[in-house]
Image: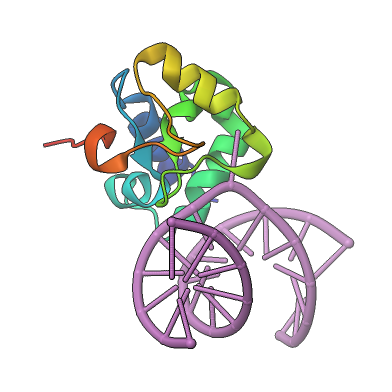
Length: 96
DNA sequence: TTGATGACGCTAC
DNA sequence: AGTAGCGCCATCA
């Protein structure tokens, strides 16, 4: 198991500022994960202590099992959702 | 070891 | 714009 990578992903997700969102692909690229699927796996295991609600798919849509829970949290942080979809082009986290 | 599954992404239709 | 198919890597049966 790559605990280093595991921790790297967690750190990256935790680095997402409030009011901003990031895609699984972005997290994978920043954390150096081989595939975005690994990001989802990490969130599934240790997502309890992480702002997982700021992580969306490339389409700007949250994961299916999350329901409106994620959208509600984002809206509370100032990220409005349009028809269950967030405007990535505007709220996408840019780690410049 | 092979096959199937999954908090996904990209391309094609 | 929405749906479908294939690829991706790690874990489990």
